[in-house]
Amino acid sequence: MCGIVAYLGQKTAQPILIEGLKRLEYRGYDSAGVALLSNGVIKIKKTSGRIAALEAILDKPQANETLGLGHTRWATHGVPNQINAHPHADYTGKIAVVHNGIIENYSTLKTWLQNEGVTFVSDTDTEVIANLIGYFYEKCDAGERTRKPQGQNRFEWAVQRALQEVHGTYGLGILCADCPDMFIGAKKGSPLILGVSEGEYILASDAAAIIEHTAKALYLSDNEMVIVTADGFHTKTIDNIAVTKSLENIEFSLEQIELGSFKHHMLKEIFEQPKALTTCMGGRIDPQNDRIHLGGVNDYLRAMTHIKRLIITACGTAFHAGLVGEFLFEQMARIITETEYASEFRYRNPIIEDGTTVIAISQSGETADTLAAVEQAKERGATVLGIVNVVGSSIARATDAGVYLHAGPEIGVASTKAFTAQVAVLTMLAIELSRRRLVSSDEATRYIKELAKIPDKISQILKQSEHIRTIAQANINQNNWLFLGRGINYPVALEGALKLKEISYIHAEGLPAAEMKHGPIALIVDGMPAVFIATNGPQYDKIIGNICEVRARKGKTIIVATEGNDHIKPYADYLITVPDAPELLQPMLTVIPLQLMAYHAAVLRGHDVDKPRNLAKSVTVE
Figure 1 (cartoon, rainbow, N blue to C red):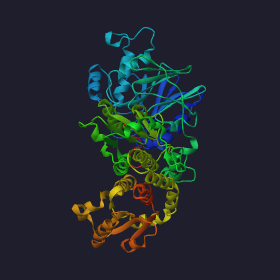
Figure 2: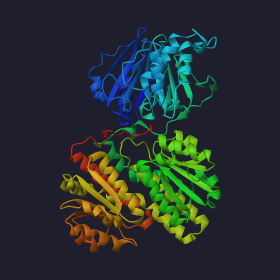
Figure 3: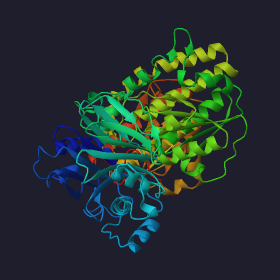
Figure 4: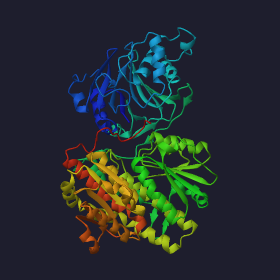
């Protein structure tokens, strides 16, 4: 969840580190710091708060300081303050560490190190890593426990030896005061990428901090480390086994992560959805020939035609996309489908029978709980497919096969375009499986042609942004909202409530509309907003009844309805329309007004939309 960056090259390191941290700030923003190697001494500057607070205390950049580390934090162990901010130095002052992840056995290691005379100053688990490396570095060859192989670099060995004691997750950048032209990166469960350019190297949590300098990158796998020197780099496992890695192209440009004319990344990404979906479906949906081509899973489609059960696992917004997928697979392809929170799936004893396929969904491809669910499903013999956005991510590498979203980088913490792209991929997969299993060619053709129209229909909805802003403005002083939908639009209600909570800090609850009267109707008071998704479909008349129940109790009804439906106007205090579409394709349309509602509510309430409190973009810790 934190952002880490390291630099070694011929340029002054500090400006490059700060620039990289700004691009990674969406990963964590409660404290920040840098460590620079200067004339054999590690200089650390760090503070609580945003990157701007760090910039205010930095010394003038020095041309001879060409090696350094940077970190922007999302706190786990220890409150966000100057002492707990990264980088952390070891007790000797020789080692500096930045860390993304959680060390599960830090307490045991800390006690052992303290018994060895090692001192600590922070409340973090990360300081244990720094001190453990420092301990082995200082004690090198002093006894059986600290004896390194002859000829191995002492710093490199100390890192390996320390990581063999550590249980948990980490993405690490590490400096040693005695090694002026060297840094080390190591990965287990947290993303880590090395950007490689001529004469310079940038280690980072994701490609956003690298792309301005190079489009060539090396993606570390779990239990691997990279040793970077002025002469080049080499990779190996933490058990000192050499690993050959290839450089890969970063699949997005610097322009894609810049704001352009937009005030916030979230708004930019909401408005990018027509283009993102067009790209996502490009080369995959062929309305001329009535076919869908999903190359990433093509080899598995024949077997999936005969599967008995499908499990979708994900967290947060991706979980809501999975719930939409459950409706799609069951109604289109008639496959028994369950959607499970990955954080729950990993801790119970799931039944994985022969003929079970698991689909894991994650925008970042690094979500810790989802990755753990993937590993558990594979251990139990399931075929596991991934739907992720980030090429080369951990889930993409861990699954048997999968489909990339190709939605472009998503910087805003509150996911928007990833959700619609995830639903689009699930829809394409459901259509193809239904065509192979039992649906008539005419029915499959209808869905393919209608799916191809979705990007243009989203563009029409986006024209209502200012209208939706006025609705948000009229209701932002209400601190409790309900979001209600039926059938396949129930997950959209959940997603709308989540978006409002995430960035506006308004309490909101998403429900199946019929469930309101089984308890939550007690919450409705005069003026309370209730957002209904009441588009054309078989349950339309039923949801009108639910709307009447809210109006009878003086709640305010905000209704998302199908364009041209004049019948619903008397039931709506506020009306938003979406173009007509088959019911199973509606979530990609009905979610757009809810994204805009949440965005405008947050801005009107004066909140930082792209960096909501207590949240980070990629949840790489449990």
